[in-house]
Length: 208
Image (cartoon, rainbow, N blue to C red; front, side, top):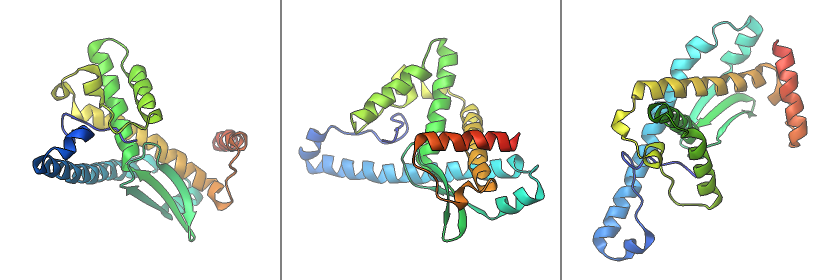
């Protein structure tokens, strides 16, 4: 379930209004088109974050690590799912793929943290709980942090949001590059959560 930004992006209409008139049907169509544009804009923005991160984050790799790193194809997709950030090998090609929804999730968390600091009250954790409830209910709309906290979106610093989102995405990229460098994707990954945690702990030991 993607998180929307109602002050700037699509505003969902209640279902029963969609059948009242042709005018409302046209508004719904325009909203769908706007939604598509919003996703495309977010995809470009998240790609710009990845492009900015890579030259700075991976400069100190050893030559064997750098050789593997250079073989990786980095992709930002239009996948709007908030947990879409994965590494894999496809037809012999090393892949790291981040959905734009994952990047926007980072931005939303950054917004919530900045609002929390401005209002001097908890916002991030209550907002995360709210989003989790919306997902569990398969809700068709989820408020962004500004609407949730009744905060003026124009009072947020876009440069701070971008910097915080970049830091979060940098961690994800480093994590996935580490899996490739340690050849975890060269063999089938276990589905058992315990086995996956053991791989994670082994990764930390190998990198120390």
